[in-house]
Amino acid sequence: MLDNLPILSMIIFSPLLGILILMFVPKEQGRWIKIVGISTAFIPLILAVFLYADFDHQSDETLQYTENVEWINVPLNQDGEVLSSLSSYTLQFNYTVGADALSLVLILLTALVSAMAALASLHIKKRWKTYYILFLLLLMGMLGVFSSRDLFLFFVFFEVTLVPMFFLVGIWGFKEREGAATKFLIYNGVGSALMLIAFLILVTTAGFTLIQPDPQQLHAMYTSGLDQIMANLIDPSAYVNIGAEMQPGSGVDNPFFLSEAMRWFLFILLVVAFGIKLPIFPFHTWMLKVHAEAPPAVVMIHSGILLKMGAYGLIRYGVMLFPEQAKEWAIVLALLGAVNIIYGAVLAFRQTDFRLVLAYSSISHMGIVLFGIAAFNVIGMEGAIFQMVSHGLISALMFLIVGSLLERTGTMELSELGGLAKSVPFISGILLVAGMASLGLPGLSGFVSEFLAFIGLFDTMPIITVVGTLGIILAAVYVLRAVLKITFGPIAAQYENMKDARLSEVVPMITLLAFIVLLGVYPSVLSDPLKHTVDQLIQNIAGRIGG
Image (cartoon, one colour):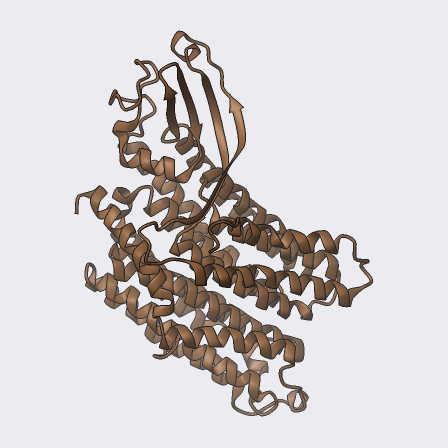
């Protein structure tokens, strides 16, 4: 039904409508600014729900809703006898978007968490117009990242997310917000630089393509299209030597062919680039500052979505482009996952600020994603993707609660909180259920994702898997310690008459919790769309590595 509509472009660029309207709303009109900002954030969610419902997960075509428009064409120098015989010789960047099941679930997650974060942004006290403009710009960038099928376009959208996030942390954060924003920009800037180097090498090697529409015309180009680059990496015989007879498929060795050493170099570059974003230990320190200093509504997006961009990039560009190298590094990825799980869990137990408990918990839970990827089987990969979605929902809900409590108490120090179930029973009840989901209680989404990832890895690396389960045990300890300290025990006098959740808080809390419960009791709502895409991904990897 939606195939005839540019539905992905509509989803990606719908936040621009709100930005355009906000530019003409006077900054003194705070009420209208909030109405426009929140309403616009719900447009991608509505469209994403239609997209999810329309997606044909039974189709043999895993990639759907594709759009391809010629964007940038740069003529290249045709000096030399062979090159001068070409009809054209260009560097080409296209606007190419599409959605397979992996993109689909993350687009829906992004739209959902962002809409709830827009509601939670009612806690923001200053410069609403600038805030919502940056918020919607960030939303556009995230949606573009998960929809892109072109390396250059992916990089552009990836960079678009950095600028608004820097200002959202640096302007609206807490006491050490400027240091947190700077650290965020430095670390992510380094990751982006490494990613750009890898992408440029890929474009100028595996991106080489010949098109011969008739015997008299021969067009040569370097393209940044993901699918073309992947096809060339899979079948090197499709390369053609520019100095030979220029016949497509001649099988002549290509001077631009990627050697084994170069493939390893690119794979490691991508692992580090996306590992900073994930984050993988020891590239995690920037994330702790952001979790502690950014406003909770912004951390909902950061923890719920931006960290998932690292996992998505690792799967899409690391594993899918270089499966042989990824498979050989499976034990390294599993060990890094185990370090993340144990390190994050141990440090979470030692924290006195609830925001830092959640920050280290995120590090631990991202290690489970690495476990699922390292398994290199269908169950493990489904577990990795499940964990991305599940953690996105749980962490967003946790920081939504943090924002509500912080507004009322002014602190997240565990030693200063206690007994809040007496004054704010609804918020405390939601916090308790969110905590149960975080520690993996059956019937909630956290259990399904962790179970799949661990079962997938146990098939190939049982010892590392058993070590990783220690993190699950520790998760129960640090989550219960923090949640029970906040909700039960004696209550301070100044907290006795606090008001419970308002409607603007109840709606996002109930919505996020409903999805957490839905995935826990009916995981097929996510696994059915994923099944065909994950099956094909694992089959392609097995075919390329010979088993």
